[in-house]
Image (cartoon, rainbow, N blue to C red; front, top):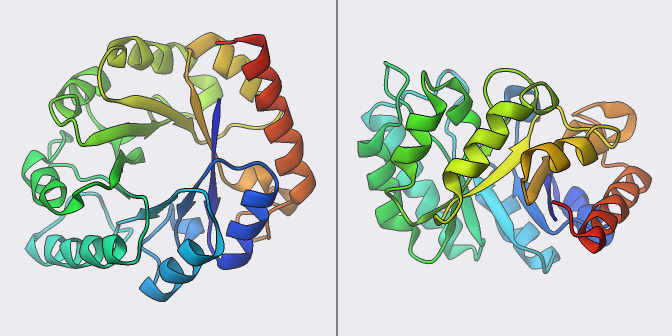
Length: 235
């Protein structure tokens, strides 16, 4: 069971790695769902930790429908992120009718080279999640989809997440469950969906506050819980 933790600064990254995180999603503007961090921060986090760093590529929080200026911005960001030595990017783009924006996706994928690519929770705004997943499955460079199974929190959408896990089985895609997971709910969500990766943000911060520092004791408890699930062979 792989644990991805949101980091918003170098201190977050160091604390996350020291307390069991397997991978980081590096962002800024956590209260807006995450935006692209400054390249200086990307460079320093990549230097500070040994675990993979996946960097958000999202130029603004207005919507996931992007125009030409947005795409040019994101292309420049992907180039800089790759040069900084990050392991991957976290990206998503939709059309106005709530489908995957394949033209935007293809423009970004041309630049990713060996980077991992996660399609982020823009996915949860799609009109049809299974159809969207089938679209993403056409692009082997896309490694995973971060999803809560729709607009609700992950613990409230177990059946939807399980359907996506089954649909992705045998493809290059993995389903990364996130949004609303807690130490109390994660075991049941894993058991009932079959996901092999989970994503945590505010639930592992002091007081559950997205703007607070990471809580080392919560993170350590979570990572031990997930290691126990691994030993038991579930899912």
